[in-house]
Amino acid sequence: MQQPTLDVETRLWQRGLVYVAGLDEAGRGCWAGPVYAGAVMLAPGTELPGVRDSKTLAPARRAALLPLIQERALSWGVGWASAEEIDALGILPATRLAMRRALEQLTPPPQALILDALTLPEVPLPQEAFPRADALALSVAAASIVAKVYRDRWMVEVAEAAYPGYGFARHKGYGTAQHQAALYAWGPCPLHRRSFAPVARLVSSQALKAGRP
Image 1: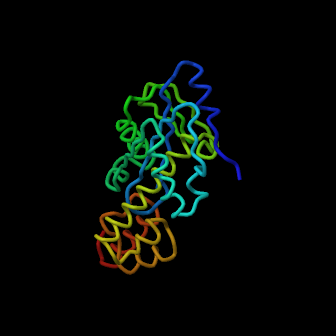
Image 2: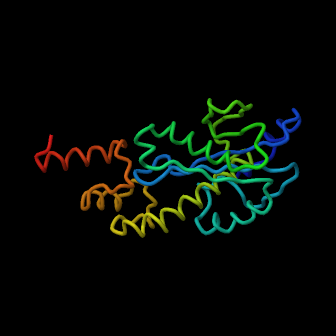
Image 3: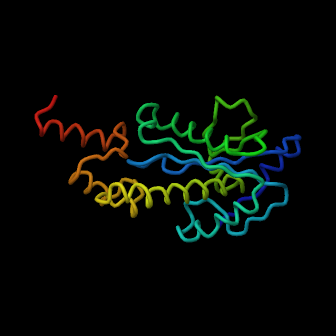
């Protein structure tokens, strides 16, 4: 399996950009809950054995790698945008908002960014954005783990506790068959993204059943 490297970071360091932040998101395609973003800055020569794209790692392995990332990173941060913000702004602007909030947690502030395809037009910094950055750039892979672990924890500890009938601890808000069944049984809760088509269709169908326009 491909291991991410510091090659992209090194190119930026060689340009005199000392503080380079890798960014990635978690939960962008979910039907419910916030979208999270992680930001990680690494120093030249940093070794993070086992760190790679969070999607390729089991949950327990991601959780075990998080302390290593936090210990060895120059700085790391987490940001998020709520379901309400996603509905108000749209998922892409909300994802960018979560990323900007993650960047605000970094000290010192970054001088350049590496992102997985998505760019941040509002951030006036040099940006390297390309597909599969989470599989290729070590700082982005680390950021993907930070975002995923923190979002999963939120869905288990907050979402499941507040709305236990939906099974958030198991599916984390993704559109699984179990989640769909819970939606049809219970209807959407305040954590659901009503702007997302599957949820919007359900809300519309329920309104028609109740005789509402």
